[in-house]
Image (cartoon, rainbow, N blue to C red):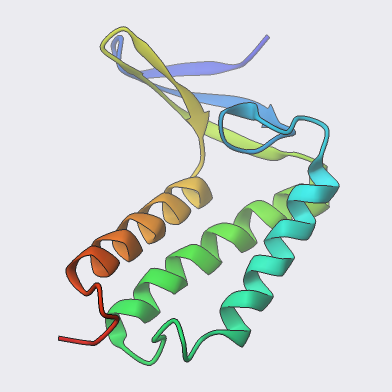
Length: 126
């Protein structure tokens, strides 16, 4: 049984979930693959830092969030064999899958990168 503490009635709980997969529990049992993908992503970010415009403050924040989230989940996965998810929300009638701070950092980093890409389609700094 999952431990849970209701923080905001019928909206937000603190839980303790062992996630052996990726987002929404996909790729269950493929922790080795998810760890490998995380390492490849970190190396790719480092190698492509010029192309990704990491010299700008905005992009440093974006990729700081991405790298922090990737490393946070990777540490859990390597240390424990799973990621600990603990934030649990009910959005109307939809029960959002539990997630953690590292997942939030990745989500925010990707979102900020998409906004940047949309506003700067030619890749030039404004």
